[in-house]
Image (cartoon, rainbow, N blue to C red; front, side, top):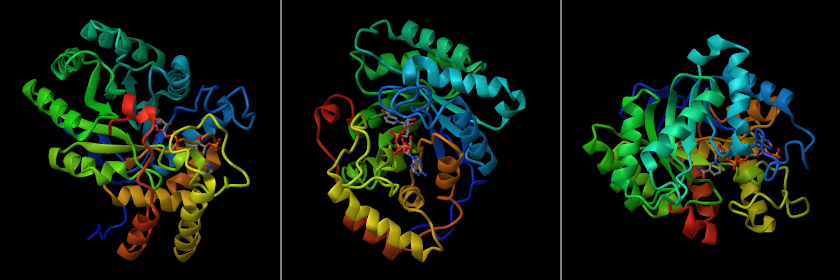
Length: 335
Ligand SMILES: NC(=O)c1ccc[n+]([C@@H]2O[C@H](COP(=O)([O-])OP(=O)(O)OC[C@H]3O[C@@H](n4cnc5c(N)ncnc54)[C@H](OP(=O)(O)O)[C@@H]3O)[C@@H](O)[C@H]2O)c1
């Protein structure tokens, strides 16, 4: 059985081990300030800091107040943009939840001091006193989970971070990090993974069930397949090549989009993106779709306030992809 109550923008989920409360839908900000993959100031002239401000405002108006960034996005520019948005309207800090990430490159062996330095630099760029959710970006550190947990515990004790998360962690890694944090009186709040109709692997391998059991909330990244599930790309009009998560042949993706369209029509004109996001929410994960402008932010916020029935969810399960096993997966995407 799926939840009978439709998720609402005003709903709040409290993250384990903290009093940080987040809505059932968030926003990803990788594209903000990023040229290589997303084209800001490069191949995509349709967006800039003004359209990003519109997206930010539309999200907040809709109650979608969880913003996900990372120290590496745009070489820090994503965090700097968020910092400027916060500085332009200081009271808004009370309303928003800021999640950012530490990239544990293998050469960062002195991980406690490296994480502390990174967290402080993120705080500086964001212009805030404490990070609401601090995530280990990927399972690439050469240090043990105990050493990473020590580093997180030190940053937590210093008040630099409020809740602790990981990203791209497998079932085994999630269990191990959860146990390491519990030993230090902390809890693992989230595991950010690629989860969408183009990648159901986290459900199939038991990662979603593991998260549920441990009280770890999955955050779903690339939830609309980097634009592939919005309906605007197709075999005839594929997305830009740089977007290499779940880059399945568009002729195959088009079949999923057809089902999204049909279900959306049956729900009074919901868009493919809204249906794709609603499917993720029904799985118990929080999607964090990127938005470059107000239109995209408002469209994505329309994933809330309604729900599909079990037959529709099952139909989507039936057409969804398992996911790709690429080099990226072996190195970075364990979850
Ligand atoms: N932890 C990790 O390793 C990791 C990895 C990847 C992403 N992430 C996080 O997850 C977030 C989301 O993932 P993502 O940005 O890769 O992919 P996504 O959310 O699936 O796709 C976002 C892109 O789709 C297009 N779009 C968004 N909403 C739309 C709408 N309603 N209608 C039409 N087009 C729309 C926009 O690009 P165009 O308009 O150019 O098509 C937008 O930039 C990131 O921003 C980041 O915060 C984390």
